[in-house]
Image (cartoon, rainbow, N blue to C red; front, side, top):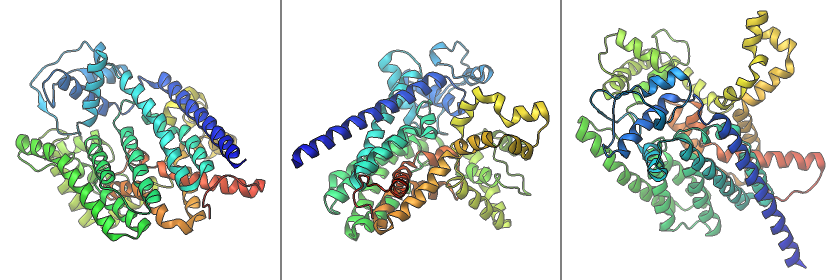
Length: 480
C-alpha cells in the first residue's frame, strides 16, 4: 500500500515538474521571439561579437576597428555579423577589456552552425535555463521537500528579470548556469554524505569557478564564502580548509594563461578586467558629489579627457587614471563613499529592480506610462499616482520584482531559522557577489545572476502563508 502511495506521489511530481519545464520553455521562447534582436547592453554585445569573429578567423584575441557598433547604434537593433557589410579598417588591437569566455562560446556556435548569428547561442541559453530550472527543483527538494522544490521551480520559470538575460546575447546569464550546478553539487554532498565532501566534488566545483572566471570574473570571493558556508553547515574545519585550498588552486591554474598573456602583451599584472578604478569612480557618481563623478561611461570618459587624460577608453591607463581620482575623492570625502555603499547595498537587495526586462516589455505599454501622461497633460508624479493608482502599483510591483523576492527571502530565512547554518551555505553565492560589487560598483545584472537561492526561501514564505490561510498541510520536509 505504501509502495503504491509513493509511486502515485512520484508520478504526480514528475507530471507537475514536466508541466513547469514546458511552461518555462514556452515563456522563454515567446520572450526570445519578441526580443531576439533587441537593442540591449549593445556595447558589450559588439565587443563579444567582434572578438568571436577574430577567433573564428584564427586571428586570436584581437579586435579590428569596424563600423559594426556604429551600424547597430544607428538602427537601434542587434545586427548579426553575418548581415553586416560595413568596412573594417586599421590595425587590430589586443583584447583586454572583457574576459574572453563568452566570445569563445559565440565562435564555437558560429563554427558549428556555419553562420555568424546570435540566435544559436540564444537558443542554447534558453535550453540551459530550463535545465537549471530542473536543477533548482532538485536543490530545493533536497533541502525542504518536493512541495518547496516544485514551487521554487515555478517561480524560477516565471522569474522575468533573469529571463531577460537568458534571451539576450550576453555573458551574464552563464554565471547562473555555472552557479546553480555548483551549489547543487556542494549541498548534495553535505546533505547526503553528512558533511564529507569528496575530492572529485572539490575539483568539479573548482573547474566551474574557473569557467566563471572567464565569463565575468566576479566570483573571486566565492571560494572564501563557500568554504565558510561548508564550515557552518558541517562544523568540520578541516573539510572547509580543504575545499578552500582546492578551489583556490584550480582557479589560479585557470588564471595563469590569461595573466601571462596580459603581462606579455601589456607588461602589467592584470588578472581580471581593468575596470576596478573605473567602477570605483563611477560608483561614487550614484550619489550627489562635489568632485564630478558620474554613473555614466561616456560622460566619465569625456570629463577625463577634458582633465588631460590622453589615452583610450577601457585601457589599463584609463583605469589607473580613474583609480587615482577615486581614491583621492574617498580620502577627502569618506562620508560620500559610505553613502554610495549604502545606496549600492539597497539597490542590490530590497530595491533591486531587474527593471531592464520591464523597460522592454513596457514599450508596448508606452501609452500608459508616466512619461506619456506628462508629455500630454503636464502631470506631476503625485498627480499621476493619485489619478492612476492601479497603474502605479503595476509598475512598482513589476519594476521591483527582484526586490520583492529579496524581502520574501528574508521572511523565509527566519521561518526556518533553526537551520540557519545550512541556509547560510545556500546564501553564500549571492553574499559573495554582493561582497564583490557593493564596495566598488553595482549594476542589476552583476547581482541578479546570483539570486536564485532567494527563490527557495521565497517559496518557504509562500507555503508558510498558505498553511496559515488555508489551514492545510503542504509537502515540506524539515520545515521547522
